[in-house]
Image (cartoon, rainbow, N blue to C red):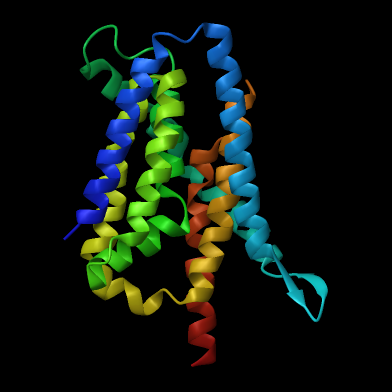
Length: 243
């Protein structure tokens, strides 16, 4: 149980370690360029995932689907997130973790590394489907693929943002581990349509994270996190109305 999530966490730890070793030999200017390039890559990944769910081909014509749901989710999620002030809470957790690690190993990018890496690793369909597959069938293949992606991303992140990236293991363990342990209860309610909608919103947030990596002025992605849950409420409202 939870083997896939443990492997995923190990891959992030390994990637972080390699990134920290590389960081020592990377000049500051080069590190900044690498981070901007990584930001562009994250933007492309997020945009591709979002567009894949928003646009569909119907008789050779490109049509949109769930576009209003995306706008509505970001709006409602933003309102809820601002009321709770999730971004501040995430920064606070990162700051507390930074104080607990040995002096000199945190670096200026500790909080940014922790928050943004945590969001990227936890937001997305692979985290949900991989955890469900692990919990229901003991099939860790999806999480193995995710581990390769997360591990390689951790190398790049850690080489520029430092050890804070490694602490993203904590939310990964909690988030994916909870889904895995509750798989039998959650699975019947996660229809492919719902997974698609969650992935759409999550990919939009990943795109925003990519923007944050190349700009000084930040989008409060943490405060938009509740948007990922709006499709869940929408789906259940539809389910109740149909029945």
